Length: 281
Ligand code: C2E
Ligand code: MG
Ligand code: MG
Ligand code: MG
Image (cartoon, rainbow, N blue to C red; front, side, top):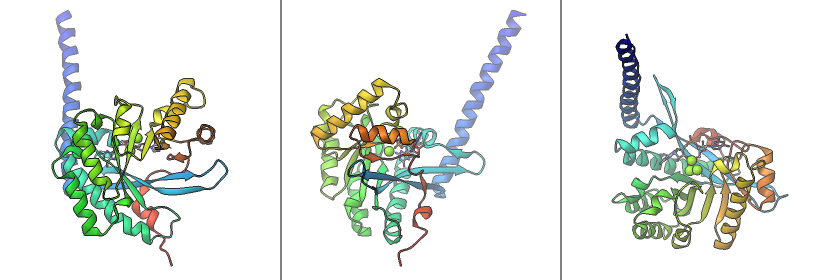
């Protein structure tokens, strides 16, 4: 009897694992297909700046975020498919797709009637940033499209700064020479030593949304955000808060001296066509 129970438990356990395995295989196949047919799409979420607490908000530009809706699987989050793409060696393809879509969206944004900066930030994974030809590829595309490097920002994460800082710094300097700017994403969640901050040509730090969520009630989050703002001031880095969802978040951030924002309170990521539908006359 006990043996039967264990056997059926094992059976249950196995089908669970089996199901997960099958789902993963299905995702991988669907992702490959989506990349081939270019059915993944960038959405753009605006970023805002304020010069003082009572002045108007200016739109600085956008962050490009990948979106994928599969016919059978429905919406799949980047938090799920980016690591999968990473493990399957598909990041170069995704990176190419994002860069293509971003560079072709920039002229459309320039023609649109939006009162918004047209700089677009893209997320770059560590493996991509280190890949052979990364810098040259961006350089060639900027030349070929005639788009000024100043309109492109790269969001990098602390994890990519940990090993081979020389190589990373070198790549960043070469891109900086083209006008490209750099933001350190998810700041505060990684392990990079603060010493890196002054060795790299960074323009801004993005405070991770996990510190913003409970900002008005959590004292340690508040202390962290204050520290990051002070750090930004002394190292001459812009500080932008991610995941600003409420007026409370906004007021608290302003009170702490942070005047750059991105989040649902202002706008959600939307398809390029959403932002470019009205043209300048
Ligand atoms: P991230 O770069 O830190 O992007 C910010 C995430 O926060 C995005 O999630 C965005 O949709 C979400 N967000 C924006 N405003 C709010 C808000 O007010 N509240 C909340 N709760 N969330 C907000 P998303 O689009 O699901 O992307 C998740 C992560 O996937 C990104 O984090 C980034 O690390 C990665 N990712 C997305 N697109 C790409 C890409 O094209 N390339 C690479 N390498 N990674 C990407
Ligand atoms: Mg980002
Ligand atoms: Mg982030
Ligand atoms: Mg994140």
